[in-house]
Length: 140
Image (cartoon, rainbow, N blue to C red; front, side, top):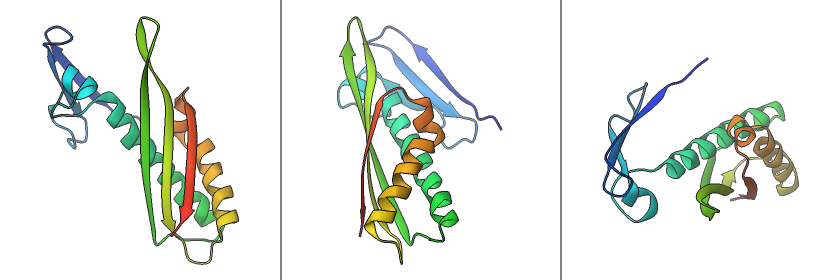
C-alpha cells in the first residue's frame, strides 16, 4: 500500500506561500506558509499534519489491540501535541505528547494503560518518529 501527498512552494521562506494536496483529495491546495508554521496565520503546517496523522494512527492501532483483548471502545479521543524546537542552525520535532480519553466498557485502568502503551509503541507513525513520545491515557 502506498499513499501520496504533494507540496508546492513559491517565494522565499518568510514571504513565500505553499499549498499541500493529498491524493485522496481531503486536502486540496491547502495553504501553508511561514506564518502558519511559526506564527498564527491561517492555514496548516507540517507539525499539525504530523499530529493529526499520529493521533489517528495511534487510535486505530489501539482499536485493533483492544479488539484482540476482547474490548470495544464506545469512544476514544486522542490529541497529539507536537513540539518543534530550534536546534543548532535548524529545527527539529523533539516531542509528541499523546493525550487519550476513552470510554471502554469492561476495561479497567491498569489493563487500558497496558494496551495503550502497546499501541503507542507499535503504531506505524510512532515507529517513524525519532522524537520522544509520551502518553497520558485515561478512561472516562
